[in-house]
View 1 (cartoon, rainbow, N blue to C red):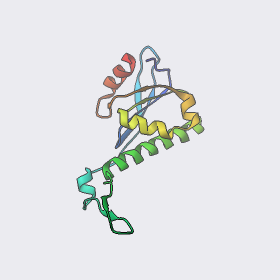
View 2 (tube, helix red, strand yellow):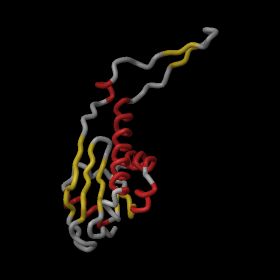
View 3 (cartoon, rainbow, N blue to C red):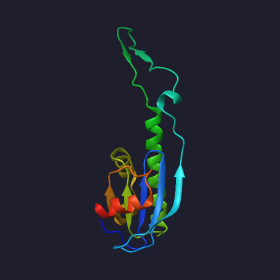
View 4 (spheres, one colour):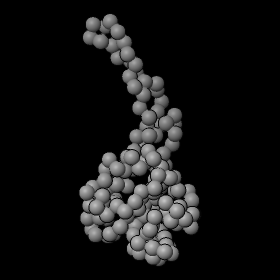
Length: 146
């Protein structure tokens, strides 16, 4: 995938996001970190204390188990929505013309739910990989190979 000069790359997962800008050109990208954000998100077992509750019908004839909420996953989804909001604000401020998003499939799906039209108009590509823990040269290679 070609990455134009001055294009923005968002590398994200459910708890970390990196905004990178290509200071190089399409042939020789040179990604520089513009913004990095990470949040703590403990495992679900460390965020919740009880099992799911039970509900009974008004007549008391039957009981059913309430679905268990995964607090860890909810927080990851919220974080992805926050990343999409940042993309929107930056797009509306004309901070970038071209965008590439790199995220694991679940995070990518959550981001897509929240893309604003201005973000979609600037989106040049998506890569469904988790590269948040990788050094920038590996991110550059993964994008070039896509």
